[in-house]
Image 1 (tube, rainbow, N blue to C red):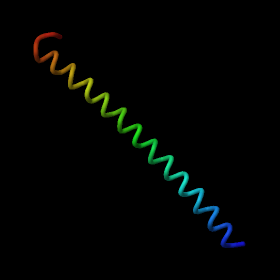
Image 2 (image 1 turned 60 degrees about the vertical axis):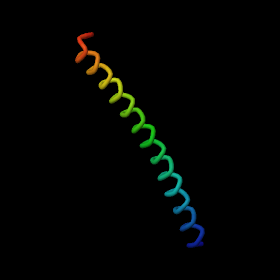
Image 3 (image 1 turned 90 degrees about the vertical axis):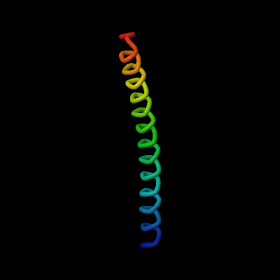
Image 4 (image 1 turned 90 degrees about the horizontal axis):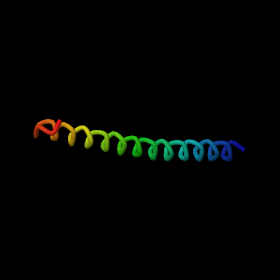
Length: 50
């Protein structure tokens, strides 16, 4: 019985870690896109198009 409980807890922990990893990867991509937009706008202002 203890083995089944341990396996169940390990499975739940693994699934939660994998979903958290996907969430962080998605957030990282969002931040990267925002940074690119800021860089583009800064370059436009530097070139006098602001």
